[in-house]
Image (cartoon, rainbow, N blue to C red; front, side):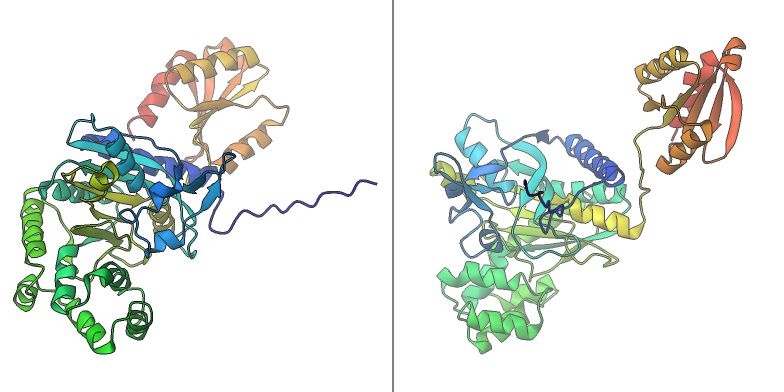
Amino acid sequence: MRQSENFNLRIPKGTRDLLPSEKILKNKLVDVLKSNFEIFGFSPLETPALELLDVLTAKFAAGEKSDAMKELFTLRDRGNRELGLRFDMTVPLARVVASNPQIPKPFKRYAIGPAWRNGPVKTGRYREFWQCDVDTVGIKEMYADAEILSLVNKIFDKLGIKHEIRINNRKILTGILKDLEIPLEKHKEVLITIDKLHKLTKEELLEEFYNERGIDKKTAEKILEMIKIKDIKILEKKIKNGQDGLKELKELLKYCKMFNVKNLVFDVSLARGLTYYTSTVFEVFASDGLIKSSLAAGGRWDDMIQKFSKLDKKIPAVGISFGIDVILDYLKLSNKIELKKSVCDVLVIPLETVKESIEILTELREKNIKSDIELSNKSLSKKLKYVNTLEIPFVVIVGKKDLVNGQITFKEMKKGEERKVRRGSLIEELKNILFKK
């Protein structure tokens, strides 16, 4: 006797299904991002989800001690080659530019797609997640950084999300570490811990400094004291090294003023967990604190492309990643956007008028009106109940008697209004309602 199979219908931890209402919202968000990326002159690029493991684990990429390396999903193909699922969109971009030197500079690109990290799961953080990245390659001046922050303002204003942009320069942080005589080989590891200032308690930070980074308590206390300074002028007087980082920060602020960038907050503790960042770093947070995770984050990564391509000259680059999943979570929690259960705007219901109803449906679709037809044998009341369940806003009922008089029945479901309209004026009537929104 054949044993029945028991299927486990759960999905892996840190992943999720998106039913139509959530997927429609996600598509809408992606459309907002894409349209604004292109308004700012960024062109699309697509790269594989799979990369050679050597590319992802290069020391000058994420860095051996970064969380991304600890959280990397790895596998082997049939040729026994070691592969990894991309953990972000930046490393693949560096590989593309390094292997295609003919690409004109500056190169402004955006990329949208899934990435994977086998890390802890919480609201706004998943193991499979979508990123929307924009990067500018080939410009060393800070106006490229400021332009990206201007794009941040435009997108979050469009989404109705009050936000703050925390900015810093990693050269300031490395300058502080030099002043405290922390060995250069420990800098990247220490920066990873510093980046956790807002996530861990003081005791947890001190413990990580001592146990994982080998930093004594007195030096760790001094680090925490320095990275809590909020005033650039005070910091300028307190550090010897890191003055070049302060100079770049001032240049960035100058360009931000030209681009009318708002909501900037200087945060000297901001380091970003990935070690490939070289100077400017920034993170975007919702002002109301409804979600603690950053909604977007990025910075300048001037070394990686040169090291991939083994060139003598650096190819500067700066970019930001918008976290689609965490932004979606924020929009749903804040009730700032209406969830639609169907993309359909109009449902056509034939009453013994299938041929004529399909003709009307075809006309609607030719005019780019999102529409469908209900051809089942259900009663009219059940069909209207289906419409209400999916919250389809308009119904066109096509009856024999109405057609004889050159009419059809038009229902606006939210208003609960029903009226007869001329068969020939339906398209105009719908376009006036739909496209004036």
